[in-house]
Amino acid sequence: MLVTLPPLAWIALFLFAPYCLLFCYSFWSLSEFQQILHHFTLANYAHLFTNPLYLTVILRSLRIAFSVVLLSLLIGYPLAFFLAFHAGRHRVLLYQAVIIPLWVSYLVRAYAWKVIFGNEGVLNTLLLWSHAASHPLSFLLYSPFAVIVTLTHIYVPFVVLPVVASLEKIPRELLESSSDLGARPWQTFLRVILPLSLPGVVSGATFALLLSFGDFLAPLLLGGPSSVMIANIVANLFGADYNWPLGAAVAVVILVIVIAILSVTQRIERRERFA
Amino acid sequence: MLESISLSIDRGEFLTLLGESGSGKTTLLRIIAGFEQPTSGQIFLERQRLDNLPPHRRPVHTVFQSYALFPHMNIFDNVAYGLRVRGVPKAETKSRVGTALAKVRMETFAAHYPRQISGGQKQRVALARALVNRPKVLLLDEPLSALDANLRVEMQSELKELQRELGITFLFVTHDQSEALAISDRVVLLHRGRIEQCGSPREIYARPRSVYVATFLGKSNLLQGTVRRGMADCGIFTVPVRCSDGPALFSLRPEAIGPPSADADGLVQFRAQVVAEQFHGANTLFSLRCANDVELTARIAGPLHSGGMMNFAFRAEDCVPLESTEKD
Image 1 (cartoon, one colour):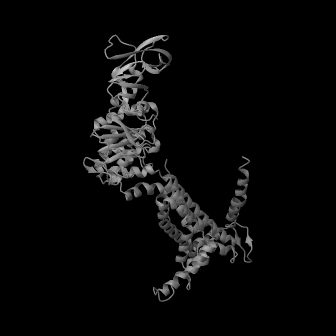
Image 2 (image 1 turned 90 degrees about the horizontal axis):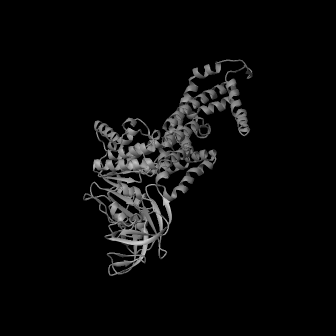
Image 3 (image 1 turned 30 degrees about the vertical axis):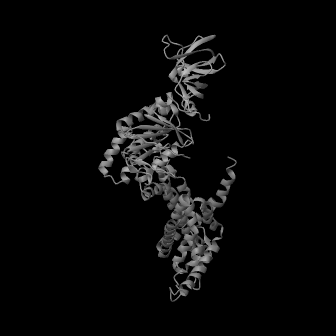
């Protein structure tokens, strides 16, 4: 009992209490003189759901997050598959190559894409030099595209690691047994490997989805006005706009969406976990 | 792991590869299944060459030691797997899976998942999953070793019966010599990647060719002797044998030794004293000390009046000359 007390106190003080406070703020309002009025009101939520701006941004954030998940899976699954089944003696090296970028600051990696995508960046210079393009491609930077590429780069390891773990957990006799029973390699993949690796896929996808849904640095650094995400709105409301009640309401909506996504993925994971 | 192996298996035979761990029995099975590649040599099944085919194109199926049932499929889907990947029509799949499950008495478990059934039941499902595809040869890799003793004996006779009924060639791998003797038409005893001896259970037990076979398959008395003109002199007795002159080693099974009977024709007699006994229920193991301090073990059903020198006897043909190989 005593051992669990400090962590519980920590969670209560620094996680639960702030959430409660946030929840309270979302029902308060702002006076004309930018003072917080501690009266219960649903005005923040009413504003949020009637102003199309917020819904648009939330939907865009979800769209970007799902694109990141899709891309991360397309890149991460084959990589994880190779790592788990074919890497042989290069396994450890390759595994580290996946993990090491996690130790590099997020900012550095985001700036790296700025260097690559900029008007005078690596990619455009290369395109101009090779005459593949007559003028710098401007859609590369400050666009949803740049945000998606950056977030994918950052969250691929979060997909690779759980997928590798779930692939490695598959007993090799199952693969031999499948082939023994007459399944071609692709049939073994579709009928045995893929279904048994789903728990890893779901948990990796959940990581990538939630982390990119709530991201605000990538859109800030590489995004431009067309790719503002919901976390940027929250940051602005709590910062420059100084509208904490509205910011809190947006944050609560984000929280509800995250919890909804989590409960769905957890249900899938529980159903897919066998033996 | 494997030295050169040359083995031909008859159609419909129940053949057992017997050996200790590391003898190469599982390697041989995996080579036939296609999970491992031989560095040289060929495998044929009814004139069709197997060793250059991938596992999924070989008409042989394996029952794995761990059963290897697919945990995400129910019993029906597990058994239907081989038929589905081959594109067998749905209706046929359904009836064949039903028949296969009925054959192993698991038809009421079709909707269960592997984690919901016992080891013995998994064993049956694994068997049904392989047999439903009508393999020409069924490979069984120590399929009974995970079961407890009673269930194991029950499954042995079930397997044997199933094999006889289906007429499919069974290639069975085990390290358990009594299991091998009980279940097989023919036993191949492997040792250090070589075939040590091959023959029917009775033959291989009664006429071991080497010290290894004699001691690996049950108990045996090993006797040093000298052969001169067809008679082996083992110190306490002389036995007529069929082998060349010179020093030789003989195997005499404990159960070949008994009290002398009235009909002494072809019996070799000797005198010994009972120095210890070990009761085993169905029979008793007696330690006998002969005049020149040679100790022998005899397995005799009834009790003996111990004390003093007594007469014992065995049939001359039960004293089997062994090939001179190093003892290990």
